[in-house]
Structures are given as C-alpha cells and as structure tokens.
Image (cartoon, rainbow, N blue to C red; front, side, top):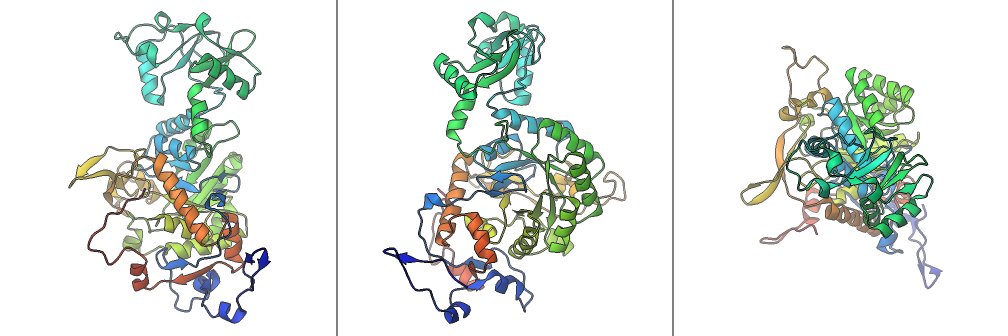
Length: 527
C-alpha cells in the first residue's frame, strides 16, 4: 500500500517501509479492525481512534460537504433527528440555513406536520411564488391568526385575497401594531397601491434586489401587465442570503426540509400531504426498518412520487440494508438502540454497536450508490468525525441538538442549571403523543396492545443558539479531518476503502487517558 506522497522543498520524502506499515505500528485498516475480527467484537465510537496523517493544507480547505441521499447533497453533513423534543419548523429552518437539514417529527397530526413543512419552505424563497394574500375585507384578527400559524406578519393585499388577484396594497407588522380593535378591516389601514414600489414580471432576482435596496422597502411585489400579483420578494431574504452562504436550498431557492412518516396505511396520505407541502425528503421512521411494512411503503412512495427522495431505516446490517435498497430507498438510516435516551438494546436485546454498524452498512451500500445517515450515538465532534471516516455520508443528531434555542420546549432551571426536556420517541410520554407507531403494529388503542417503553425522558443542558453551535461543530470536524490528513469527505471514503486510513482499538484505560483526567476540578466550555 502506498501512502500519500509527502514533499519537502518540492522533493518527495521516502515512504515508510512495508514491514513497518504492516506491523500495526501505524495503526490498522478498517478491514483489519471490523472484518478480520476473530474475537467477534462490535465497536462503538469510543472504542476506536483515527490515526493522524500528514497535514499539507490549511483548515479552511477542508471540504465537509457530502451526500444525504442519491440526489441531495449538503454543504454541512448534519441532520436533526425527527423527535418531538428536537425538530420542528424553527430547528429545521436553522439547520437548513447552516447547510444541514431538519427532519420534522411525525407526532403531529397530518395537517400540522404539513404546516410545519410549509413554514420551512416559505421562510426564505427568493421569488415567493405563492405568498399568503389577504383581501381588503379581512380583519386584524385574521392577520394575527395567520401570523400565529405561519410566523410572519407582512401580506400583499389583492382584490380576490389570493395570488393572481389585482394588487391593492400591502400590510406589515407596523401597520397592525397600534390597532386595538381586532375587527377593523384591512382596507382601513393598509399601505395603498399608489404608495408601493413594485416591479414588472420578467425581471431577474438580482435586478429585484437592487430595487429593494434603492427603495429601502421591506417587500417588493412583482406584477404583470394587468397589475396582477405574480410574486413577492422580501428584503429579509436578502439579509439571510448574506448571513448564511451555506444554506441548503432547492432549485426554487427554498430551504430544504425533510419529514418523518410511519409505515401504517394512513401514512400514505401523510406522505401525500407532505409532498404537496413541498417536502424534499421523506424518512420512514421505524426503530427496526427491515419489515414488510416498510418495504411496501418505500415501494409505494418511489412508484407514486419518484421525484421525492426516501430514506429507509433504521438498519444495522447489510442484510437489512439490501432489502430496503431493493425496495427503492435513496438513503439508509443506520443505528439501533444506541441513542442516549434509547433502551432498545436493553429491553429487546437487539441492536448493534454504532461504529461497527456504520462501517458494515456503509461499505455494503456503497456498491449501490446509496449514502448512509449515521443516526445516534453522537456525543462530540470527535464522534461525528469518526462516523464520517467510517463511511457515513451524514450524521443525524438528537441529544446534541436538544437543548438549543431552536429545539421545541421551554427552558427550566434545576440545581441552578438551565435545561430543556429531551425524550426518546420510544418513551411512554412520546408514545402517548403518537410515537408508538415506530414500534407497535397492533391497534394501540385496543386492550391487547401493551406498550413497552424503549426510551426514557430526561433533560439536557442549554447549548445556546444553533447560529453559534453549528459553526462550532463544523470547525471541530474540520480540525479532526485535518489532523487525519484528509482534505474532503470524498478523500476520507477513498482512503477508507483503499486501506490508507488507519485506526486503532482503545482499551478502557486509553479511553480514560484520551479524555480530561488528573485534575482536581475543571470547567468545560464548548466555545
């Protein structure tokens, strides 16, 4: 095996001799660790360590973009888990702005989950081709109701109250701020048409941006020759574009968003409404994904909606993965019983250590061009780096993102520590809200359906906003890859399967040595 060529003063240095390389002095290949495994041991992220490589590039050149599915590529390989204490619209929006993606949980009703997807898709649109419109006869109460549902408060006013109607005016938050009577009609306080700056249909987005900058207005309606509204452009969208250059977007400049569905017959209708709302990827959410029910729904989704990517799972072996691949899955979610709030391995005695699961499934799925999403077991940036070095395309995180400002729920204090609730979707509390469909295929309301908890409820410490936390995570991963001598995740994959990337198994003492030790006390700050 040849290592990367190292140069000094533009002259190549001699490579290490083959005997030393094969002795294990420089670590071991993934094949030696995971395949030639006479002890039949499965490994976690903590069990392994990546051997350092030669650094010949600056940190900013490390490319961490990678495939989520066959057709979706993320600039930041982070995915928020579809858990009801992790991902709703606010989390999904910020994940997408930071270059990742959020998967909306399915403990909502079908209509509410679709509404969450629409909130994400409407958040940042470039040309907003389907803005919420109102008529002059709507009231202040209507404005407040829609603001509560969708999260924004500026609306174009048309004669029909719909897109395509004749533009009559615009209302914004400042128009309604000092109106006390909720029954006042919009026509009495809207900014009328003759005071609006507008643009003609057919202009480019860059031209529209210049008009907004010059007019210093918040909204720019776009009309046709009949003065009918055909689009809307928001000034805040320009600011978001400037602040979030890595944002994950579709061809229409809308943020990417995913949503979870189950495998029951009613989930086919859920999938239909989510797709109508604009969802970009569906995640079939099962704790054990190799089931007849999941194969059938993946086949149905890919036959009926071939334009929408589907991630199947969860799986931990190539046998499971192969069934889902043959059903048509565009990506695989890997992990079983290894989340911080998951008790599946304890209760059911089924699962697999995550490092072994990620390596074996990723290696197999690579033959068919199917990316792997490493789900669970992530406790640090080092774990993220290990998952990516073992073949994962992206990592899905629950506890790592719970406790951030964007996660659902309110903060509370316990023993002077600021916390947020976090629970497994297999906990009894989550099951009572609908989470049992990941586990139970009986009529959950019948007397014979006994719920067996496969998760717990708890709390996690405040982590602040994702605006700071995600950049910290991405920078930590870049540092890890740089120390391993890897410039991109494509190179990591190539070196993994060419036996150039080396690992070692850590003893319990080595794991202790690799963490903070020998101190009377210390304070750990992330950033």
